[in-house]
Image (cartoon, helix red, strand yellow):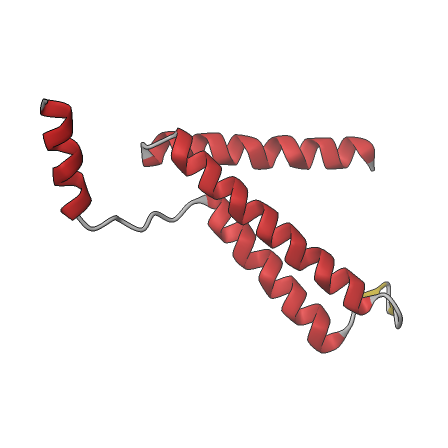
Length: 102
């Protein structure tokens, strides 16, 4: 019975917006996609004329996936400190895998 009263009390409280590392990653991917759509993709000075739009859409896809992962992590970890540790560990793991594959 007490659980129902706590749940009813939580419904009326406004939810706090929490900044997390994956929020910053999502914003970064959207910024990169916007930059590529405006200026085109260039690596070592030579432009990718036919691939710029595709690369921009890939960054938008990355942003959507990272945003969904952020939502999933928020549902599993309610404490902000624990959420930061988990998300930073996830970003580090992805970076290490990226550099190992590269």
